[in-house]
Amino acid sequence: MRFGLFGSATARHSGPDVDSGQGYREFTEYNVEAEALGFHSTFVVEHHFTGFGQVSASLTLLTWIAAKTTTLRLGTAVLVLPWHNPVLIAEQAATIDLLSGGRLDFGVGKGYRHNEFSGFAIPIEEAEARFEESLEVITKAWTSTERFSHQGRYWRFENIIVEPPTAQKPHPPFWMGAGSPESIRKVAERGYNLLLDQFASFETIGERIALFKAEVEKRGRKFNPQDVAVARGFYVAKDKADKEEALERRIEAQRRLTASSIAPGRENKASILAFSDTREANEASALYGTPDEIAAKIEKLRSLGVEYILLNGGGHSRDNLRRFAREVMPAFLDEPRMRAAG
Image (spheres, rainbow, N blue to C red):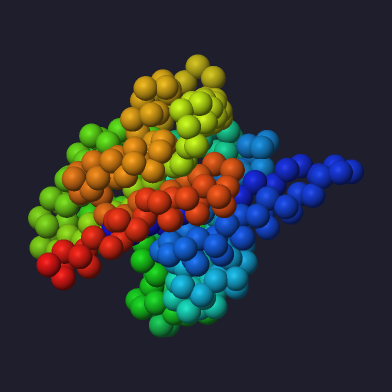
């Protein structure tokens, strides 16, 4: 199996005794250690206007992490294309890919949080159309060797050629966040890799992977299970009480997410919000517990087709990361070699 990281740094608001950069430095050190421990990748989120300091400039942060690492894949999970000038994004992402030696995984999505669309004064109803147009421009920017123009509904560009070129050819791998059957089919149709959220139940994850596999094979391509990355919260607990406290923190974060995502008096049908915030649902879906409990859950995920897990450890405890790497990961990394040897 393959393991990566998922999440973001946190920058506390400035004040006379507050170092707003501390959270970013700690997150960078967390990623540097993850690379040394054998993690494959880091996928960084993008959020705005939260009030609790989540990462907003994810490409900038990834550039810094790229300079501090040598093998770690650098992912976005996800860049919300409706908010961005697609040509500027293509230039910035290509720069990271070039400087990192071809380590960028370009994860994209449409967005779902009401407060973010409201903050940018962009109607959330336009999200899909803006996403489609931006995706078209970015793909053309990375694959065109000659100047081109674009006259669209939201963007116009005249006689441009986008520089620098990407290191990966024809471009960095596209990853797309999806959950509904229709969205998953579109990911397969485009030939992209699939990102699955950290809140869905194991059974739902299994159903989504099975659908994606069927759609990929229907189009005559070979399915690679590591083209699907499944995010999961993780916490290696010291004891039962420690686990309970961690689950309570997770539930609180879920409710905060829901509050920022839904407009007053309106329903948000985004698949990422279709989770239960009960304690039982969280214990079942998150990788919380002793090393043996976590290993059993990973075995269950693997039986459902999961071969690539992105771990979200709230707080970015390096002790938590080390315990997972030393007490859980080895069995899953070594087993394929053991099977081959047998």
